[in-house]
Image: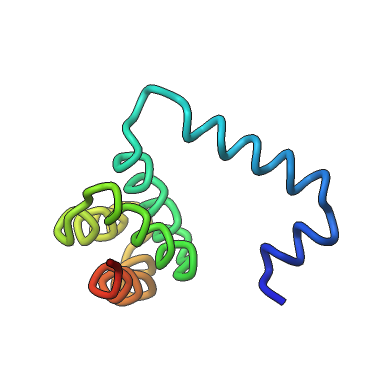
Amino acid sequence: MNPIELFQKEAPAVAEAFDGLVESLKASQGLDGKTKQLVYIGIKAAMGETTAVYFHVQMAKKLGATRDEIKDTILITLTVCGLKGVVNCLPAALEAYDQAV
């Protein structure tokens, strides 16, 4: 079972509250959707979370992010965590970007 589906099945009230938090963050007005996705990609890349990077790159592309913006977002993690984010996440990010519609 997919980890998100397991979370929703085993803790439906918590999953629903989490979904509400995500929706309220999407609706906030300080940053546009593309910028929010780029920030999220940078944070997840710094943490080495390739799966999250993969899916959020696809969302960012749909919101107008360019391949260079994705690449720069991940490269900037060099100043935060060294090579970890780049070597773990840049290949997954570029693959996701190139495959996304």
